[in-house]
Image 1 (tube, rainbow, N blue to C red):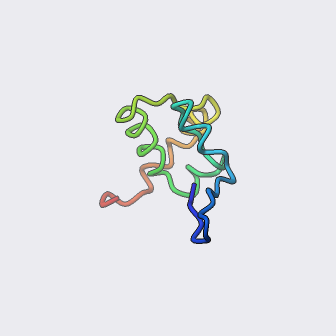
Image 2: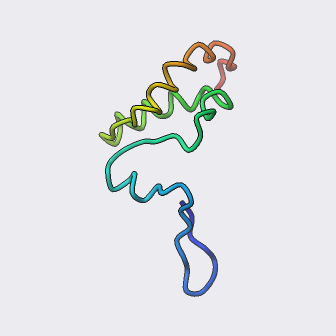
Length: 77
């Protein structure tokens, strides 16, 4: 979700994130998101807990599928 710099500003929401926010739901934009960056899985679970959001079933399945990639991430991350 972004806001254009035009006048008047326009909401840019190609992934329909505003509806997900209204539904208090976390949803991955792409099924490969956790393969591209496994730390996103940890972030998703933390944000779901912090904001009392549900994780979309397909996103939860992708987190479980790609959880084995986390040991490849540097400890600093």
